[in-house]
Length: 272
Image (tube, rainbow, N blue to C red; front, side, top):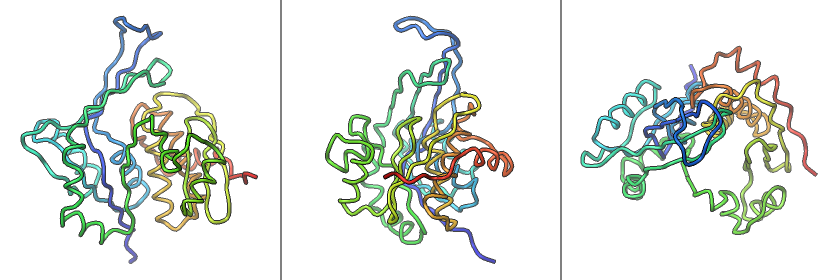
Protein backbone atom coordinates (compact mmCIF):
# COMPACT_ATOMS: atom_id res chain seq x y z
CA UNK A 1 0.00 0.00 0.00
CA UNK A 2 1.50 3.38 -0.99
CA UNK A 3 2.28 5.76 1.85
CA UNK A 4 1.11 9.36 1.88
CA UNK A 5 3.70 12.07 1.23
CA UNK A 6 5.29 13.64 4.30
CA UNK A 7 5.73 17.39 4.78
CA UNK A 8 7.79 19.14 7.43
CA UNK A 9 6.69 22.62 8.49
CA UNK A 10 8.94 25.13 10.23
CA UNK A 11 7.21 28.10 11.79
CA UNK A 12 4.67 29.42 14.21
CA UNK A 13 2.18 27.57 16.39
CA UNK A 14 0.85 29.85 19.09
CA UNK A 15 -2.23 31.27 20.78
CA UNK A 16 -4.55 33.10 18.37
CA UNK A 17 -7.13 35.51 19.76
CA UNK A 18 -9.76 37.04 17.48
CA UNK A 19 -12.03 39.76 18.76
CA UNK A 20 -14.95 40.77 16.54
CA UNK A 21 -16.83 44.03 16.98
CA UNK A 22 -20.60 43.48 17.20
CA UNK A 23 -21.62 46.72 15.47
CA UNK A 24 -19.94 49.60 13.62
CA UNK A 25 -16.33 50.02 14.76
CA UNK A 26 -15.70 53.25 16.68
CA UNK A 27 -11.98 54.16 17.00
CA UNK A 28 -10.61 55.25 20.40
CA UNK A 29 -13.76 54.01 22.16
CA UNK A 30 -15.10 50.94 23.94
CA UNK A 31 -16.61 48.59 21.35
CA UNK A 32 -18.87 45.65 22.34
CA UNK A 33 -17.91 42.38 20.73
CA UNK A 34 -16.92 38.74 21.12
CA UNK A 35 -13.43 37.36 21.78
CA UNK A 36 -12.45 33.85 20.64
CA UNK A 37 -9.22 32.04 21.49
CA UNK A 38 -7.67 29.14 19.59
CA UNK A 39 -4.29 27.77 18.59
CA UNK A 40 -3.09 29.23 15.31
CA UNK A 41 -0.06 30.52 13.47
CA UNK A 42 0.40 30.73 9.72
CA UNK A 43 2.35 27.50 9.32
CA UNK A 44 0.21 25.58 11.80
CA UNK A 45 -3.02 26.68 10.13
CA UNK A 46 -1.67 25.75 6.71
CA UNK A 47 -0.43 22.42 8.05
CA UNK A 48 -3.85 21.53 9.46
CA UNK A 49 -5.37 22.21 6.04
CA UNK A 50 -2.71 19.98 4.48
CA UNK A 51 -3.49 17.11 6.87
CA UNK A 52 -7.21 17.43 6.04
CA UNK A 53 -6.25 16.71 2.42
CA UNK A 54 -4.51 13.41 3.25
CA UNK A 55 -0.85 14.34 3.75
CA UNK A 56 1.31 13.24 6.72
CA UNK A 57 2.90 16.15 8.54
CA UNK A 58 5.36 17.15 11.23
CA UNK A 59 6.00 20.56 12.79
CA UNK A 60 9.11 22.19 14.17
CA UNK A 61 8.24 25.25 16.25
CA UNK A 62 9.13 26.81 19.61
CA UNK A 63 6.94 27.61 22.61
CA UNK A 64 7.12 28.48 26.30
CA UNK A 65 6.72 26.28 29.35
CA UNK A 66 3.43 27.87 30.37
CA UNK A 67 -0.23 26.84 30.21
CA UNK A 68 -0.51 28.36 26.74
CA UNK A 69 2.34 26.11 25.62
CA UNK A 70 0.46 23.05 26.90
CA UNK A 71 -2.60 24.19 24.94
CA UNK A 72 -0.49 24.48 21.78
CA UNK A 73 1.00 21.01 22.31
CA UNK A 74 -2.47 19.48 22.72
CA UNK A 75 -3.71 21.14 19.53
CA UNK A 76 -0.76 19.81 17.53
CA UNK A 77 -1.42 16.30 18.84
CA UNK A 78 -5.17 16.50 18.17
CA UNK A 79 -4.47 17.56 14.59
CA UNK A 80 -2.48 14.36 14.00
CA UNK A 81 0.77 16.23 13.44
CA UNK A 82 4.14 14.96 14.73
CA UNK A 83 5.50 17.56 17.18
CA UNK A 84 9.24 18.29 16.86
CA UNK A 85 9.04 21.62 18.70
CA UNK A 86 11.40 22.92 21.37
CA UNK A 87 10.00 24.07 24.74
CA UNK A 88 11.65 26.89 26.72
CA UNK A 89 10.42 26.50 30.29
CA UNK A 90 11.33 30.05 31.33
CA UNK A 91 9.67 31.77 28.37
CA UNK A 92 6.15 32.85 27.41
CA UNK A 93 4.43 31.17 24.48
CA UNK A 94 3.95 33.60 21.55
CA UNK A 95 0.49 34.93 20.80
CA UNK A 96 -1.35 36.89 18.14
CA UNK A 97 -4.43 39.03 18.80
CA UNK A 98 -6.55 40.25 15.88
CA UNK A 99 -9.44 42.70 16.08
CA UNK A 100 -11.90 42.46 13.19
CA UNK A 101 -14.96 44.48 12.30
CA UNK A 102 -18.52 43.20 12.01
CA UNK A 103 -17.93 42.39 8.32
CA UNK A 104 -14.95 40.15 9.09
CA UNK A 105 -12.25 42.60 7.93
CA UNK A 106 -9.09 43.11 9.99
CA UNK A 107 -8.88 46.31 12.04
CA UNK A 108 -5.53 45.67 13.73
CA UNK A 109 -3.32 42.74 14.66
CA UNK A 110 -1.01 42.57 17.70
CA UNK A 111 1.87 40.07 17.60
CA UNK A 112 3.77 39.03 20.75
CA UNK A 113 6.36 36.90 18.95
CA UNK A 114 9.61 37.59 20.77
CA UNK A 115 10.41 33.92 21.41
CA UNK A 116 10.43 33.17 17.68
CA UNK A 117 13.04 35.86 17.04
CA UNK A 118 15.11 34.64 19.97
CA UNK A 119 15.00 30.88 19.48
CA UNK A 120 14.24 29.92 15.87
CA UNK A 121 17.66 30.68 14.30
CA UNK A 122 19.35 28.26 16.68
CA UNK A 123 16.64 25.58 16.54
CA UNK A 124 16.71 25.14 12.76
CA UNK A 125 20.45 24.45 12.95
CA UNK A 126 20.01 21.55 15.40
CA UNK A 127 20.81 18.02 14.25
CA UNK A 128 17.17 17.05 14.96
CA UNK A 129 15.97 19.66 12.50
CA UNK A 130 18.50 18.67 9.82
CA UNK A 131 17.45 15.02 10.12
CA UNK A 132 13.77 15.90 9.79
CA UNK A 133 14.48 18.06 6.75
CA UNK A 134 16.41 15.24 5.08
CA UNK A 135 13.54 12.78 5.60
CA UNK A 136 10.71 15.05 4.39
CA UNK A 137 9.22 14.97 0.89
CA UNK A 138 8.59 18.72 1.09
CA UNK A 139 9.33 21.67 3.38
CA UNK A 140 6.82 24.37 4.33
CA UNK A 141 8.65 27.35 5.84
CA UNK A 142 7.02 30.38 7.46
CA UNK A 143 9.00 33.34 6.10
CA UNK A 144 6.73 35.81 7.93
CA UNK A 145 8.08 38.99 6.36
CA UNK A 146 6.70 42.28 7.73
CA UNK A 147 3.89 43.89 5.74
CA UNK A 148 6.20 46.76 4.79
CA UNK A 149 8.54 44.31 3.05
CA UNK A 150 5.79 43.54 0.48
CA UNK A 151 6.62 39.82 0.67
CA UNK A 152 7.37 38.84 -2.96
CA UNK A 153 8.47 42.39 -3.75
CA UNK A 154 11.19 41.99 -1.12
CA UNK A 155 12.67 39.15 -3.15
CA UNK A 156 12.50 41.25 -6.30
CA UNK A 157 14.10 44.21 -4.57
CA UNK A 158 11.61 46.64 -6.09
CA UNK A 159 8.24 48.19 -5.30
CA UNK A 160 6.38 46.52 -8.16
CA UNK A 161 3.35 44.27 -8.48
CA UNK A 162 1.38 42.10 -10.89
CA UNK A 163 3.00 40.88 -14.10
CA UNK A 164 6.08 43.06 -13.53
CA UNK A 165 6.68 41.33 -10.19
CA UNK A 166 6.28 37.90 -11.77
CA UNK A 167 8.78 38.83 -14.47
CA UNK A 168 11.34 39.92 -11.90
CA UNK A 169 10.92 36.75 -9.83
CA UNK A 170 11.40 34.62 -12.94
CA UNK A 171 14.52 36.61 -13.77
CA UNK A 172 15.81 35.59 -10.32
CA UNK A 173 15.49 31.94 -11.46
CA UNK A 174 12.27 31.08 -9.60
CA UNK A 175 10.57 28.49 -11.82
CA UNK A 176 7.14 28.65 -10.19
CA UNK A 177 5.27 30.71 -7.65
CA UNK A 178 2.01 32.24 -6.50
CA UNK A 179 1.25 35.86 -5.60
CA UNK A 180 -1.91 36.81 -3.70
CA UNK A 181 -3.32 40.23 -2.89
CA UNK A 182 -6.51 39.95 -0.86
CA UNK A 183 -9.59 39.52 -3.05
CA UNK A 184 -7.71 40.31 -6.27
CA UNK A 185 -7.06 37.55 -8.83
CA UNK A 186 -4.47 35.02 -7.65
CA UNK A 187 -1.46 35.27 -9.93
CA UNK A 188 0.68 32.20 -10.63
CA UNK A 189 3.55 31.27 -12.87
CA UNK A 190 5.25 28.06 -13.92
CA UNK A 191 7.43 26.88 -16.78
CA UNK A 192 4.47 27.19 -19.15
CA UNK A 193 3.87 30.87 -18.43
CA UNK A 194 1.82 33.23 -16.29
CA UNK A 195 -1.79 32.57 -15.29
CA UNK A 196 -4.48 33.93 -13.01
CA UNK A 197 -7.42 32.48 -11.08
CA UNK A 198 -10.32 34.76 -10.21
CA UNK A 199 -11.51 33.97 -6.67
CA UNK A 200 -15.28 33.46 -6.50
CA UNK A 201 -17.26 35.75 -4.21
CA UNK A 202 -17.77 34.08 -0.81
CA UNK A 203 -21.35 32.98 -0.17
CA UNK A 204 -20.99 34.77 3.17
CA UNK A 205 -18.13 36.47 5.01
CA UNK A 206 -17.56 35.29 8.57
CA UNK A 207 -13.87 36.01 9.15
CA UNK A 208 -11.03 36.65 6.69
CA UNK A 209 -8.45 35.35 9.18
CA UNK A 210 -6.67 32.25 7.90
CA UNK A 211 -7.73 32.53 4.25
CA UNK A 212 -4.15 32.77 3.03
CA UNK A 213 -3.09 29.90 5.28
CA UNK A 214 -5.88 27.71 3.90
CA UNK A 215 -4.89 28.58 0.33
CA UNK A 216 -1.28 27.64 1.05
CA UNK A 217 -2.15 24.39 2.79
CA UNK A 218 -4.59 23.07 0.21
CA UNK A 219 -2.32 24.06 -2.68
CA UNK A 220 0.72 22.35 -1.18
CA UNK A 221 -1.31 19.22 -0.39
CA UNK A 222 -2.52 19.04 -3.99
CA UNK A 223 1.03 19.48 -5.31
CA UNK A 224 2.18 16.61 -3.09
CA UNK A 225 -0.59 14.46 -4.56
CA UNK A 226 0.90 15.10 -7.99
CA UNK A 227 -1.38 17.81 -9.37
CA UNK A 228 0.18 20.53 -11.55
CA UNK A 229 0.32 24.02 -10.05
CA UNK A 230 -2.66 25.38 -12.01
CA UNK A 231 -4.99 22.64 -10.75
CA UNK A 232 -3.47 22.65 -7.26
CA UNK A 233 -4.02 26.39 -6.93
CA UNK A 234 -7.72 25.98 -7.76
CA UNK A 235 -7.98 23.73 -4.68
CA UNK A 236 -6.16 26.39 -2.67
CA UNK A 237 -8.60 29.09 -3.77
CA UNK A 238 -11.53 26.83 -2.82
CA UNK A 239 -10.06 26.26 0.65
CA UNK A 240 -9.53 30.01 1.08
CA UNK A 241 -13.19 30.65 0.28
CA UNK A 242 -14.26 28.07 2.86
CA UNK A 243 -12.01 29.78 5.43
CA UNK A 244 -13.60 33.17 4.75
CA UNK A 245 -17.04 31.63 5.15
CA UNK A 246 -16.10 30.01 8.48
CA UNK A 247 -15.65 31.61 11.90
CA UNK A 248 -12.80 29.14 12.46
CA UNK A 249 -9.26 29.94 11.30
CA UNK A 250 -9.03 26.42 9.85
CA UNK A 251 -12.41 25.54 8.30
CA UNK A 252 -14.03 22.16 8.79
CA UNK A 253 -15.31 20.59 5.58
CA UNK A 254 -16.31 17.27 4.06
CA UNK A 255 -15.25 15.94 0.69
CA UNK A 256 -18.67 16.97 -0.57
CA UNK A 257 -18.56 20.55 0.69
CA UNK A 258 -15.01 20.96 -0.59
CA UNK A 259 -16.11 19.68 -3.99
CA UNK A 260 -18.96 22.20 -4.05
CA UNK A 261 -16.56 25.04 -3.27
CA UNK A 262 -14.09 23.82 -5.90
CA UNK A 263 -16.84 23.81 -8.52
CA UNK A 264 -17.25 27.55 -7.97
CA UNK A 265 -13.57 28.27 -8.73
CA UNK A 266 -12.97 29.06 -12.42
CA UNK A 267 -10.19 27.42 -14.39
CA UNK A 268 -6.88 29.25 -14.62
CA UNK A 269 -6.72 31.81 -17.40
CA UNK A 270 -3.61 32.75 -19.33
CA UNK A 271 -2.20 36.20 -18.59
CA UNK A 272 -0.76 37.76 -21.73
